[in-house]
Length: 399
Length: 80
Image (cartoon, rainbow over all chains, first blue to last red; front, side, top):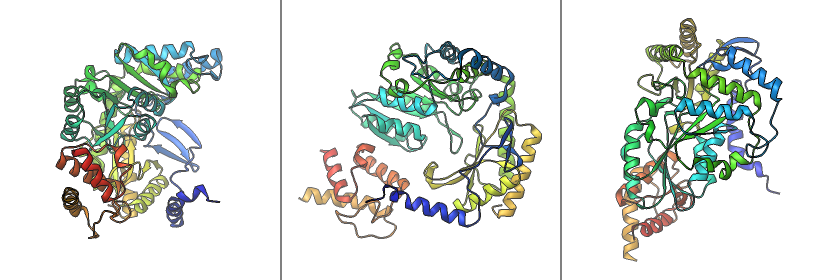
């Protein structure tokens, strides 16, 4: 008998090798208590959270929690059904209404996760004979959406407008084309030149999908994302987003002005063949989205935090993923996986949690300590974070 | 046959700057196994080939191309 698991042997060996050096497993951490958007108890120790994507700190917002409790009482624990059968409750419609208002778009469709939103929309709208043109550093959910569909896939170098334009020009003029971009790329926290990319895509007659998962709520005048910030949101055909970052819950969505958009509810399999979000989740989400429309002060504080952390880490001598703070993600580049894991553990022992990111999730085979800031991090916490980075970095010998 | 060997020579010329190990390149040389290219190198090389021939090699096609001979055939077909 062939053991189907033998294909994982190399990964198992790498993992055992890493753990045998005495570091704890970075991928099986448990949050024993969560005290606030920025503090949890890990291994019995109070720990500052700097790797949660909880950008706007909405997870413990009083109004959000009250809305969830009310929905739990009035609508029950779950929907036990698909959105197209028994699984659309009042809360799902309210959530979609809140999104339409937030983005000022005509149509909104709520999925059970952000992953499923990309999977569903991309695999459904680009079919056989169509082309999907995507950035090589696209998120796994985008690649999986491509793999699930029947379109031809064309990749171009990360954030390279010229490479995108050249490839678009080489494709058959009359073929259906979908260009898939992200506002903020989650590994390095860098922003895409959407304005130029959207211009060349429109010139080639392509439709455009932008994933704004990591920008919703704090980039752009109304928090609509990088496309809004760069003044090109009107040229975007589909915006994909998630509730599991700034909104502070779980779920995904697509908003659009396409006049035929509603047909997606019948043809998009990851929307149809799964249970809808629980009532409490959609109630929390709708309340949170509406509060994010008025989050100007929090946004300003988040940017301050991001800039302070970026400058502080750079001054300490760490190598960072971007020359300046472009989003609320600051990626610290580690020399290799071994030292990255040691640094990660040293930070945790100093009471600081960040994400350890490694290939294949990362570009160019990099090991990263990825920090994501929260609007609820105080200036004192940010100073504290820099102290802990200095101590851990010196102990491990990275700075 | 000359056309095919011309194509082979052109592609071999494009492979050489990425052939860090100095592997002898033949039709049966594989990119992942013999040349030991990682995904990043593959991406850079594909972009070189695409720009040199003004073609697009989709990821669907790339999945089917494991060795140099298959690449020669694929690029020949795309430039026809």
